[in-house]
Picture 1 (tube, helix red, strand yellow):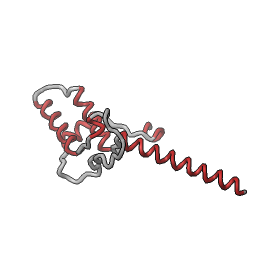
Picture 2 (tube, helix red, strand yellow):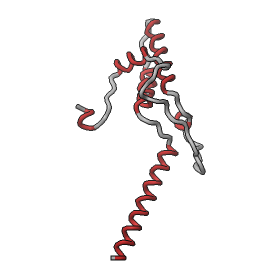
Picture 3 (cartoon, rainbow, N blue to C red):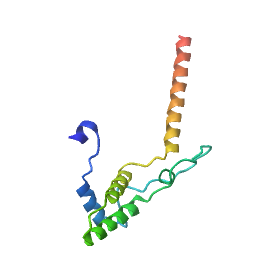
Picture 4 (cartoon, rainbow, N blue to C red):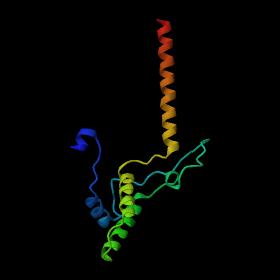
Length: 129
């Protein structure tokens, strides 16, 4: 119901754990790894965390998390909260395209520039009328 009403994906942790434990990164998957930063141009990316600035191979990361989960369970340990969080974040990266803050900023600037141009053109057309 949440997905239908709000358009949000719902992730069930038990399903994620099972998926990670059986995941094989060598097989073909619908979800591709995050794309690396490209052409950062004049933007200063100091201050971005390593997580924000680097690319991730989410398939390999997901498989590694699955292996850690298996190891913990085989040793009779509980799955740590930190591992649950890593698993969830990795699943989000698998599901949604990663955009670094620089890319997001550029997209907003481009949309704002286009909006200004359109409004300028509308004003010119209004004057011509």
